[in-house]
Image (tube, rainbow, N blue to C red; front, side, top):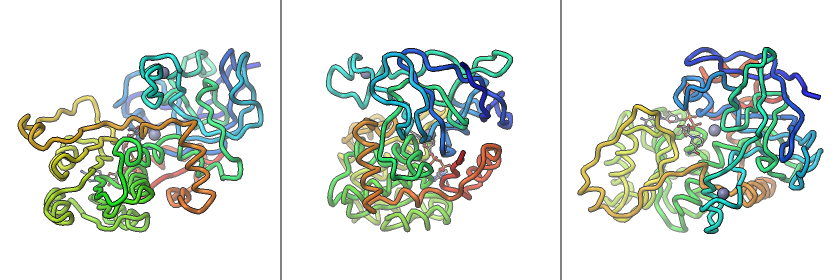
Length: 361
Ligand SMILES: NC(=O)c1ccc[n+]([C@@H]2O[C@H](COP(=O)([O-])OP(=O)(O)OC[C@H]3O[C@@H](n4cnc5c(N)ncnc54)[C@H](O)[C@@H]3O)[C@@H](O)[C@H]2O)c1
Ligand SMILES: [Zn+2]
Ligand SMILES: [Zn+2]
């Protein structure tokens, strides 16, 4: 029988979010209902609330979550009731042209639950990134559930469901950071700091954190940045070049996603270096660069969708590293909050007061 749960809804463009009752159907074929234990507040949720992703309001927000599978629909074999899972927004299809070429981390046909969750009056909801996990329970495609070691706490496990995976993957998977590389990370929120942590895991020799907020730079240092640059006080490109023998960094990761930060990343990279765009721009943003510079500087300009992660490969591996004490996921959790505190958490995020607020249910 369909269940009624409490969940966070973004009703309209720029309007504050509110807790409302949501109807969660029983799982159909290939679907699962997951009891959410924790869900992080990501900047992308705020992008949804502001109408910067699309206009499919009302949204059911939240997508960085971990919980326990409650029920599964017909034909589900990958997970079973009672499994502890991290929700992912890349349920690999196995059949699209990316999957068939052996690049499932790009899967072009990832799927979500087919049935819709609704408000009590029947209004259909658009779950953020096909998840919608600021909710006591949510309905997803079974492939969106990745089983991990239940020894980890849900509030840190959930972070791998989006921002932290995106940042670590931007460094490890997209940027292909290697031992001895120099890396600069522009924007040190949850995603940027995860890129710092990923670069450190990869053995980068120099990790330069760039932000406009000194508090963020202090956290980035604690997470492994070897140098910091406040780009409000200094020219980021000059500072990064100075810290890399005048050359620029091998890999520059833009974890803000604005034309000005992208340009900084473009020019702060060494010849034949790599730019990774992991911050998400809004629709009105455009970029102008001399084409000769694009050619002349060589290298690679890449975007990182979800850290180019393969959840089945990356989530259990990163949870293992965390449990072994080699990856401190707990350092990303600034505060745990209740479901009705998401709007306040957006304000604190915008003020730069938090790395991650995590809703614990
Ligand atoms: N590619 C993906 O798959 C993916 C996944 C998750 C999040 N994201 C995106 O990553 C971005 C960062 O997310 P977050 O959760 O870390 O956000 P956040 O708000 O926690 O962090 C943003 C950081 O950027 C800094 N910043 C802002 N403007 C700056 C500027 N001009 N120069 C330098 N630093 C600046 C802020 O001070 C803050 O520390 C967002 O755009 C989010 O939507 C992308
Ligand atoms: Zn596919
Ligand atoms: Zn996110």
